[in-house]
Image 1 (cartoon, protein in one colour):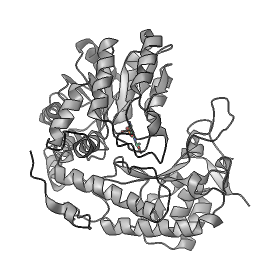
Image 2 (image 1 turned 90 degrees about the vertical axis):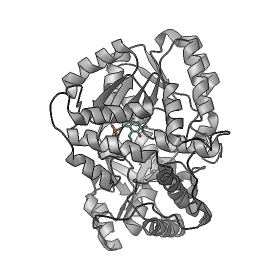
Image 3 (image 1 turned 45 degrees about the horizontal axis):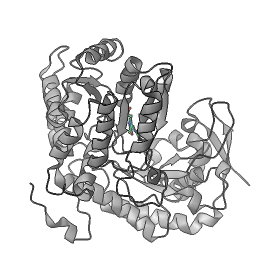
Length: 464
Ligand code: F0G
């Protein structure tokens, strides 16, 4: 058991690090930003990052590496086969997750591509609490069907269930009963990114494991935010508060047969990922494909120096001081927004705060993209870049028609160890101004859009 330190007695969310190298950020005027928004057709993905003051577009690959990670990079050995950096990486991954086979990839979606090319295909159905968009896209590209079976509380932005990422066990059992023969594997995403960064409990994972045993199905974790999930278990689940997070992670992994991973999230790296499993035959098929599309099995899609940075990052990711700060600082932003009356998904998730734009802008019809309106306004008001997760992202149907998404959210994702409390206080002030201006904000219409994944490149214009 680690000694629990008393930081929580103070209001200030103290960053458990000092700044060692600084990156300048752009101070710009509202008029400049309004002009740039017009220039890029109100699509925040098209803005040059140099014109963004606080970039909350994603927590993926945007974190700050530590002194020890930069030092580890100097140990990077670029041997094609059997590099010492590979052994450092493999041993760090096995220490936490314990799977027999570890297969490095350049990022998470490459692991997904390999997993589903081998296990997916026409007629297959793959359940998850909620598939992340690249996970769904990769399994659908194989011809398989993805099914989201998160508990009903997980679909309600204002429900305060402590483990809103949990799998609906009864729904999973019905699926396995009805279509068991079509299910190659069961997945659980920790934390549930698409559902608000919400955690899954150990109890729920054990119940999923029991069903997988009953129906002889392998269980794979999409474990991008495993450490944040384990911290929530440490904080919220009965009987877990005395445990080391690393031990909780080991137990989570022991309940699964394999995992996909993006090292751009909790492992605190700017690139990287892996696929892991216990089954020898499956691993052989994964490696055959890996060699075609990523690289030799001892480096996969990565340089030796990336493997070193991941090995070191994994030891930092499970530090209690770091995780306490990480989860507390995300909650700090969320609680401040709640206090201002800005509707947000609760409880606050691990890596992001999600503004409920449909509730904030009731005068804007979902088909006029209230989420886009909030995201554009946050940039225009204060140079803060966020991400619409709503009707722009999900509204278009396969037949080309359009309907409102289930929710119109705007995600403020917090890069790891990157912004200080004063940056976040500034974001809170920008949101305060957003709330004041809310009734004057306008909806948007789409001017041009590609056939697929339109949110990345569509252009917009304000209505009226
Ligand atoms: N699974 C989850 C739950 C994710 O959040 C992501 C990426 C991936 C898989 C894919 O990993 O980016 O390394 O290929 N999420 C990022 C985000 C892009 O902004 O939430 P990747």
